[in-house]
Each structure stands twice: as structure tokens, then as C-alpha cells.
Image 1: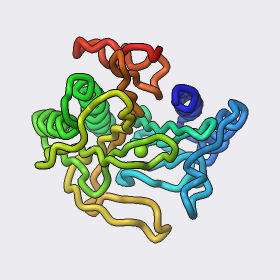
Image 2: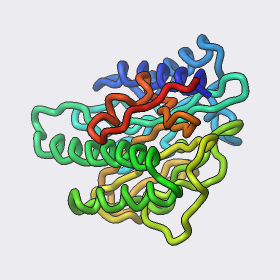
Image 3: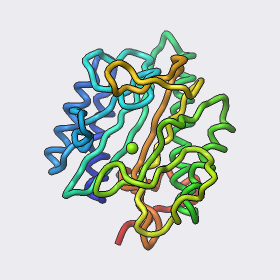
Length: 260
Ligand code: MG
């Protein structure tokens, strides 16, 4: 799964590089697909029945599953980009959020930036928690406590993280909030996509008429960060981070271990 994770990271890095005002989601989608195919992979979102794109690009109140279109990004947009690659039958899945600068709306940029920061920090805390957990539900409990301690943020409950392997979406579910059942034991061989989806208001969502795009009912902003993480004999490794997660995990005193 390392090759799939590395190719996913490369495709999302290219999308990030191109994400500027005036560019379109379709520009990012084409670039990410090119990176994945030139790297010998298949865009695994295209393997989801009925979906034709490489990425999901969700702007402002769209939370996840946004279909790339031709409306250019604008200053101040908060944009979440989700994508993955399948290589030799194994999968990677990751997402990031960006807030585009807007000199005329510093307050909007600041609050959106904070929302994205809280979501990214929640992801890394979740990964660090996985590194020390005995059962998977510890991840969601840590994320919930952190997010609610950061302010009036909502944690989406309609969508959660997932196991990943031969297919992109597998058991077990990875909750971003506290649940009663402990979930599976965290032990070598467990590979999961942790993906907090955090909103600035109500967690109620609806699906747009395109049958894909998930949007907040009250129009509040949303952010989404995701990594695919492997638990192995020597520790954990963030498959979709170029450095295995070293930078993101350092503040938690967790050092990712290369897979032997
Ligand atoms: Mg995912």
C-alpha cells in the first residue's frame, strides 16, 4: 500500500499547487489524473459506481463529494480536495483543505483558516492516538474532545472514515466522535483512512441535485482532512504523507516507523 499512498500524495500535491484563484476544479482533476496514470496507478474514485472524476472538490458549504466543475476558484474560498490512487490492486485515499487569500475579507479568511487548522490538527491527533490505542474507538473520542475544546465546531456524523486496502472503502468504520462499541483491536495489519469533516455550524447536511455533493443545511463552512495510515509490526506509517507523517506527528511525541 506504500506505492498507492505515495502516488495519492503526489497527485494531491499537484492539485494543491494548481489551487489558485482563477483555476477550476476540473483543472485540478485533470492534473491529478495525469499524475496517477503516469505513476502507473488508477484513480480509484473512478472505480466508485457512477463517479467519473479523479477528485472530489468541495467549496465553502459543500463538505465532501463535490463534483469537479468549471466555476473558477475565487479569493476567500475554502476548498477541500479529496482523491486516491489504486496501484497493483491496493488503495490510497487522502484529502486536504485550503483557504485562498482574500485581502478584502480578512475576517472570513481568518475564520475559515481556523476551521481548517482545527480539522487538520484533529486529523493528526487522531493519527497520534491510533499509534497508542488498544481499540479503534479511542481515535474518535480524542478527535471529539479536541474539536469541541477548540470552539463552536460541529463534527459530521453522516460520514466517517473507513478501513482501506484492496478497495478504497472497507470495514471498519472510523468514527470522528465518541462511540460505545470499542471497535477492532489496533494491531499490525490494520489500515484505516482517518478523515474528520468539521463544520462551523450545524452538522445537518443534504445532498445536492447532482446526487453527490454533500452540503451543510445552514450554509456554514466546512473543512476535511484525511490520511491513510498503516499499523504494522514496528509502529505506524502515514501512507499518504511524503514523510510518513513525521512532521505532523512530532508535536505528539510520535515518530512514524518505516515499514520493513
Ligand atoms: Mg476516505
